[in-house]
Length: 326
Image (cartoon, rainbow, N blue to C red; front, side, top):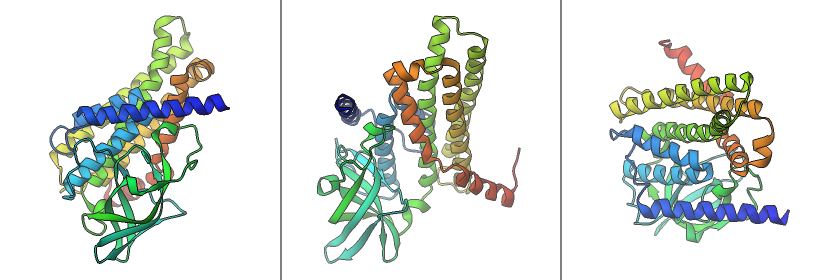
């Protein structure tokens, strides 16, 4: 067990070094959503996820924060600063903010804070007397709760609960501005690019095996199905990116529907890919290939940002009201 913990800590440290390098190199200075090169933005995120999903989670959060700050006229990120977006609002402990003479003070606990110990700054949602608002905070003033992410999947993303003890926060945008801006659904759709990249990484184990040895007709059938699924996801991502670039301010009010459809499709594809690769190759890669086993565990957790039947029901309600062009 001690060795396993050390291995996990070593991998988290490696991912953190990778995140720092991506920020400091300028490689995360990606086109903003809707700026005409959304395909390029998502291709970069997918490539990071294909490499490592925990790294992609940190990088996606940073790039999302940069886009949010630009859209809501927030403070410009300092060179080399590393940002996260901590906006989950699950049941349990919560975060509140109150106005004071010198600004705003935040108190409470925020859950699911990726990059809790490696980010320098974060955008966090908190409950105020007038509703939810977004705040920019410096991470050095916060207290990550050690051991609050004991799971194996996405362990290297440094996703912990974080305590705020009367911490200063700078408001970004108006009340409810975080969820009401056009970029909210654009950013949500961008997460699907990471899921797609992770699924590609999982599929490579089957592709490599089929290129090295005779895997049999059943495994080849799974490979064929994986090819169709990934090509479908890629086409959907490209179409969605082009639609966002054609209507960056979401004047057609299509952003939420597009995001729900895209995430549902890519989640289903990634789930199918993991299942087919496992059925084709058996336990071998999961038990003896550390990178593959970690990728499957990470993707399993990452996909749960999709709210399954709840999101499908929301999409179904829209379709029932507005109709569909099938």
